[in-house]
Length: 171
Image (cartoon, rainbow, N blue to C red; front, side, top):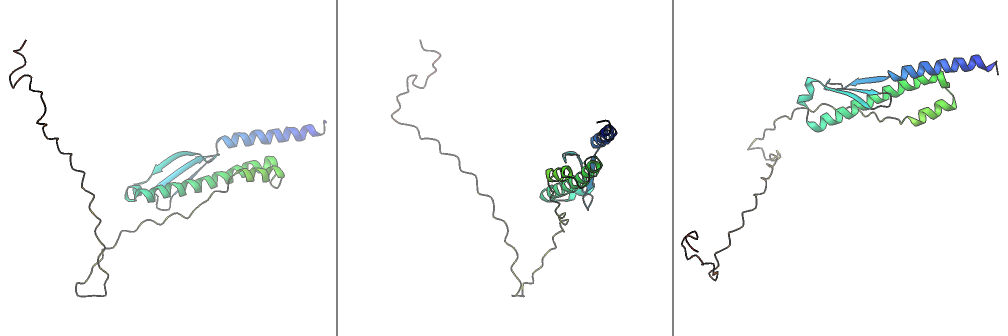
């Protein structure tokens, strides 16, 4: 048992160092156009999100896609750091390392969507029959429903108790 004691002490030391390093793991990625910067922790959870000036020029759907793509790239970097820290502790080719790698989902790192280009104006020659007609204008929104008509006065209504006079003067 004494022969294992130095090895156990060394493993404990490496584990303590790894544990301390894991506390500080984070990864940051920036989109190609600089519109989005995302920082994640060891678990891949989003810790910080920043938008560059380019973010104001991007449609919301494209900005959302850029946020996701950038965060996924940061998560992939964090996973690489995690395995690099754990390899000396559990062995680079050990069953434990294989297990750890299986527990880290392989992140989908999609290609970042290309920044949207500004639409080019289309000109049509009135005399050129081969040109496609201009795109149809969007339909106008439907008109709001009309207000219901006020019901007509009921001629059989006997509510003429006060016969047009003030009700204050009656006993």
